[in-house]
Length: 393
Image 1 (cartoon, rainbow, N blue to C red):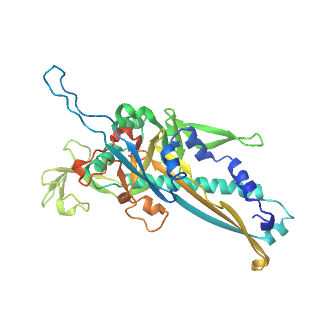
Image 2: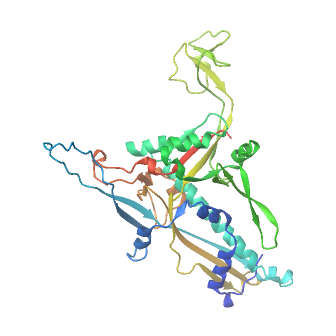
Image 3: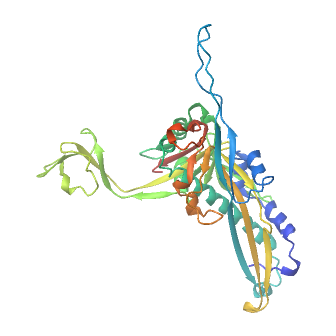
């Protein structure tokens, strides 16, 4: 519990106190260079009076086929196209209330440092939730051939646990030679535990102000920062039948009726095997948990703290519960995935909720913007160092 004197509350001093508390995950994100500044975004939200949403224009690459220079073939010219990216400001606010009585019964202990540290950690969590919601939205894109291609190429599914080769294979599928840009992996603790048991993860350590060394929920895998978060998406997949080969262990032959040993009646299969014909084979897969991990590359997110007019504020209520002080916090930040545009197709207010950020309808690969999709030129998906890994541990 904390006691504040709202009359003497110094917003700037409190902001400094919050920001000097080690903000572990955000600091490590910045060290990994996943978050990077963007001059065009800075200009849009400072010099051009952008407040909640902006569209950033940038030049396309010189491309097209060269002709044979032989003295008789005309040289053809092509034009570079302009691309556009939608960028949205995410605003979040929170308040905490503390009573005078809590101060009195502790003998006047000053909890300001503790509050500052908790606010820093809370804001760290908010930013991480925003990033994860955006990633959910990116991989929920399901309109347009190029968007679907991105989701397919940048999603890697393994039937078992992560292994020593999973990360390298997944990033290569997503970006080919550009896989060297990947710098960070978000994963559930169950996944990290499996990798730790294989001695593949080395945990980072932090020395606090008292000189005590503590192990963080952060480590490295193949030189890439690992951020462990139990709010990563998980899905429990119930027992079901899957297509199999006759030689697979436990395989059953599908028959229309009168199944004998080694066979199963199609009508007795509870899972949907409508695409499996009689005389094909299935195998029963037991219930398992499916984990989603995200791998991000250097500069994969443009980041800007737009700021709020009053980021921290105190309010005094002398009557309720014998007297209370309330701390209000506000923040407005941009986390814009490079090469992917926020289209604001489904957004009810000036700031998107996490649910709206996770809506695939709000996202699209950056393109030249022609009305017909067939006329558009899209950014090469291999330039976007973002991939999703689905595993069972």
